[in-house]
Image (cartoon, rainbow, N blue to C red; front, top):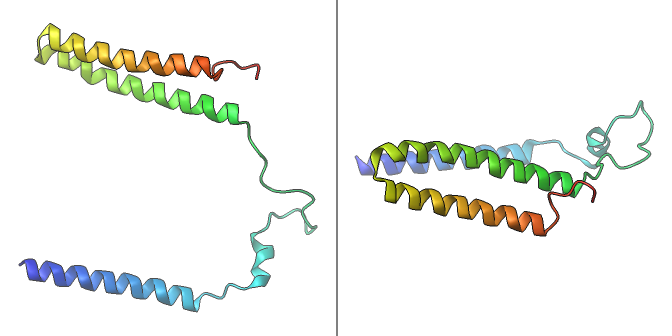
Length: 118
């Protein structure tokens, strides 16, 4: 049985590598396809870069939101843990979790990531 699984695994690896190799060889990419990949501006050459830099501060605020959004999803199992364990274990886990979040919030505050005027 294990030998059969090993043969199937080797066969799948061989087929997938063969397909990737064939797609690389048979693709017709050339230097002239560079224009197809550039942004279209009514047939004119692009006047500026298509990549517009975004605010790093906005990115940091998004990461902070995601962290605290995941934090809410992690607090719900702690509430259910209160029913299964005694109060001392529940309070230690909750206290440790809240301390980690407060240290993270304090670090963000010291880095001025919560200040919108920057």
